[in-house]
Image (cartoon, rainbow, N blue to C red; front, side, top):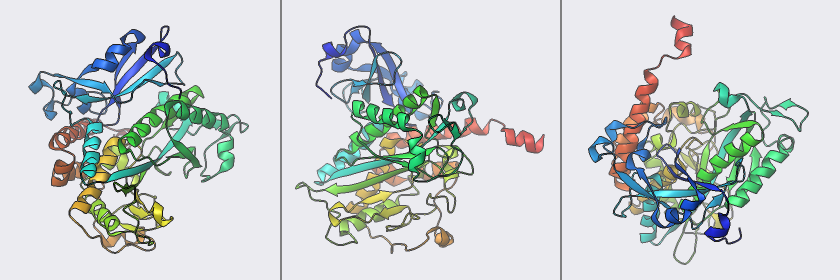
Length: 449
């Protein structure tokens, strides 16, 4: 992207969106006229601290200690990138600014998920390590009526002679050919926003796709890209009369949407410390794996933050059901992909696409860091079908409420991700559970009325 001054970027009546990411991964902020750009870039924008801890529907969570107890005080939201980023799919010319929240005195506001991840990355830097991260996000394209109806329906591909995507066609090139103009516009929007999109894959579900990001040695920027990408996909989809969803399990009988994380560690000389020239990887890789397995249950609420999230975790459904690891094995939770030794890395396969990217990376990297610091040792890697062995292992929390209890009791999360974060996120999840359980579902009426 060519270098622009604020003045030549904002001639005319342009507006821009400034937003932070709340703990649920929802974007909260303000739409601001061009005349306010200089002040925003130098002084930031005030938003209540409590915005970070909203429940999924944008309501205050009174039990998190950030509302009445503080007088609903303001934080300062400061831009995290040096210039606004274009929003190519907007109906009128508009840009966006991603921000992070600070306290009024300039200190980090640690319930902010971007601050949580930044703190973990800084702890790695203190040890002389830099995480290198790549993400893989799955999503479903939907019929354009799906958002209004609040029910998923596969889209019709106009270029494909009106064919509805209602069958599994994994890795199908023909399916992507039918959506050529959509994916071309996705590519263009990614380039305009500096999002390093790589391969596009047709996945297991009808109208399900995965786009992989290139590796970056800035883990916080990798999460920025994931957040912006999710907004981009929905925006471009609407331009093509589609809907799009990152919901974990939009179809009960189809594949869920996952969010896989690949990472390695560089030392101060730029060497991959997971590489020792063997297929097994270094002792540091083994320690990191052990940390991931040890804290997987603690972090399940981060990886699966919503009621629907837990529908992904079924035997044989391509989502792990217990803490496991192995080499080149996609039935385990933590996979060591086959690669050249210089590219030795870990793939974490637990999170759903509905999870907050900042928090997922913070939980994954934090667990790996603890494994390294404590010099943990993993169990033997699993060979073959891990699902067939699930009865021999303690399952991951498979209910929303159980995951919340485990999360709230975790000393690891309090130590690595922060006391404030645990309190605020846990309170939001408990309020969401109360709201959902207070409603009577259609299936109850159909069964019991």
